[in-house]
Image (cartoon, rainbow, N blue to C red; front, side):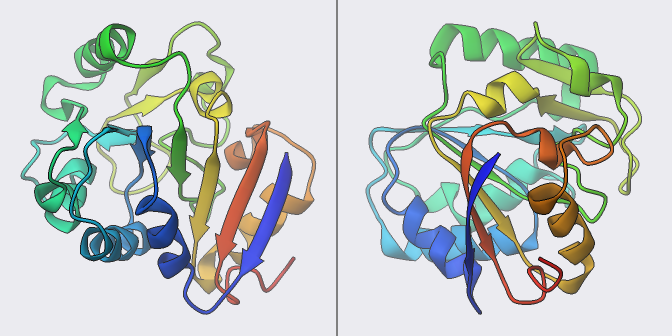
Length: 218
């Protein structure tokens, strides 16, 4: 990984500015810091024509559930993003059927490579719903897989993009905030790649938007 690390007091604002200028096929992630970025991007841009929105991962819950990544993004951004085409992961179908449906949708409507992927990073170093040591980290054929048992709470099954899809993205941006992420940030951006820290397996040039607390151990 070749990372352009940018530390600021408000990385969500930097992410919002990038999102407000995107076009093409864009993958969104879940989390509280991305939610802030989505809310601000919605205020910056009215017309999202030409943007296809995909998701990096989803919990296997209905779209209106409080744990749904789509539900969060819809409230923060998508319901206000006039002209955007939204491709949500159907978590209510369960991990296997939901993953198969999303893979089919990517094959039918999606590009060979996403134009922009926004990633978070868990305190355990996970990205999407790819957790440390999970067999899904070795998947090289499928673009989307189901995760029956996630590596951290909430302990509900997931649907996730696989590493080849993430790594093929034209632009990859990490958005990370909080002291609880500092050890993972150091491992991912300063250590050798390995399955104990899935974020370290991103094999591309990336932009990492961090707050000082997240960057404290770099």
